[in-house]
Image (cartoon, rainbow, N blue to C red):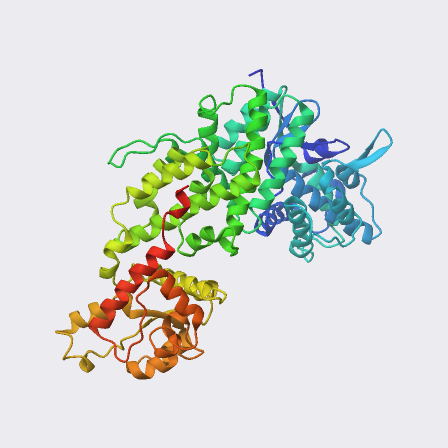
Length: 607
């Protein structure tokens, strides 16, 4: 690095008739109301510590200074590397002061030239960012501005200017001393200006400053690093716009959506190692990516193919492509469609590692038809994995399954569709045991509750589809004020069943068997708490039930040809009951085994 020198400059010296651009390393303008409040409070309090009633403007020259920290610039073009949050915020304050001055019929020689100036016959704002110009013009002219379709920076700029109009202490700094405050702000607020002469030096300063605790995120640091390696200015600007657009979409519904995506993407496509599960083990690729992933990319750049400027350009284009795929996955997780239904199913039981696995087989060259097919194949595998785990009473929390998921991720990385099916089928065949082997012993408890509810919803929805009725799965699983709940066919009254069950524990075990459970609307479920089976059966077979609950009564088998056809074609052991105890629960358990085998199978993996 060449010699770096810093020099103290007042705000007037820095901003007066001087043009700045926002360097591509920098984040969007992110300040929130609390930041503006702190800035206004600090500046006005400092000024008021010096001001004495009756002071003239000339006396302000003897007031003390206020130090705002450093401003780091790159080259002669005055690109801001570090400090744009403060510079942009101070510009908003200057615009507020300027509008008040104009409203009062006053003038101040320094304020307007610190906001905008003229070069070669054209006027523009001193912090010159094209996408902000329309909003800044509105603010400068005291006009309203619609931020509905604006980017993140523009929304924040307009919001913070509005905040200033409320926050500024009008009662303490009234119109009579407003010009005093403007003089002090222009002449007595100082920065240390640091100018780097080369692009590479600018990047080194940026990384050093922010790696040592300043408040940029890993996403912003990664962007700065990648773009600093793009030599062509036009390409760099185009790629910067691509990055900003994708980040805006990733953060639309989730403040950390950008970081969540990048971690999933890097793990799915590039991570090769994971920490050993023993005390004292060191973090590996998978673990490091979960933290400061920008450092991991920089440290592992050669391993992931970043050798020259073209590689960095391609890497950002891949970021764009995989971000689009990730956004499609998130949409599929939140909105049911037949095309991506398994993605939706898995999200209902909070399988958080799903995006990583779904991204793993995707190739940069894949078209969207191929991408969707791969997503569906992997999502189906996850679906089978979930039911295999919970029916064996094995947890699906992050720490328990991350190693398995990571090994699958590596195995299916950038596979063709035939390879993907073959590999996932092999993993499926190696599952410890299939649900059909353990399902009859499955009981409802605090761990299995959400999975059993999902299983009952899936089975009921499947029967509905097969019998010509639209699946009600989404309603069964919806998180509403009056949701569907698991219904115990046998009411919780052991004293009614002492002849059949040996003790309370025996009663509880049978009552919580999966064959003794249904899904009913919460309000209906509550009304049946203390009812006997013959009374419950009337509700099960009414409009308040569903096809699975109706199957307990004779009515479901009368004048219902599609249901009877479904039973016959699949050789299912459905039958009506007039009583419900151990024998009936045993039969319903076996029926559930048959239904689970219909709903959860590996047909998708077999050509």
